[in-house]
Length: 267
Image 1 (cartoon, rainbow, N blue to C red):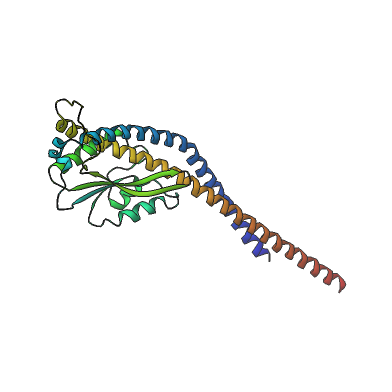
Image 2: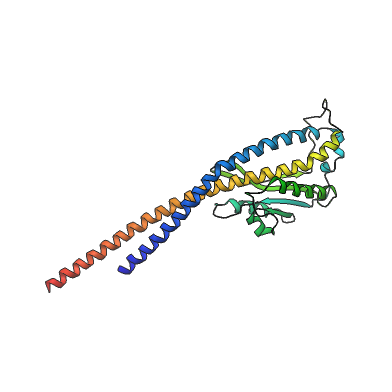
């Protein structure tokens, strides 16, 4: 019986150590949520302004000549995959990779350490991914698209819904679709709509990549916080169950010892 109580003490100590780790990781994630959310919201505002500009430009017939509005018969695809830098975030990374697995013929461009581990190293941090890096990547992608190196560009990232809910999704960026609702009529663009769209395209792609990276990071820390909270609760429940089992085993051992002493004294 003493061996049983010793094994239970070891297990309780091990689970307690794990719970301390999950509590610490949960606190770290909580401390990052506010900053990540502020960055995400600012990025969304910036992207909304870009989308409004692009929507206005793509409503002009002259812009149909832009290489960024050319829909081709072939479907050579490039997809930017944004995943986390670390694990222990529930199904966050798994959901991203499950969606990416549906596009078996696409060329994947990873952002985030986990994505780089899966698809080959390019960029290794979704948390610190800068606009300068996004601009350099966007310049390369827009040049290749205009030259006909591929036919459509998408981003697989995670949409932030709330602290408790995030979902992986794909957003197609290039080619631009024609906007039939908004028109550039009544507006004057210098030197002309086509030139402005061709120049805005690179900034739009860069902005889209940056915003998706920021939203994905906000989703990652939220998912990690929820995962660590759940792990800590499960660990505490396990400790309670083990402690109850330990107390019963100890009580049983004490009762047996008393019985043996009484029996011995009677002899």
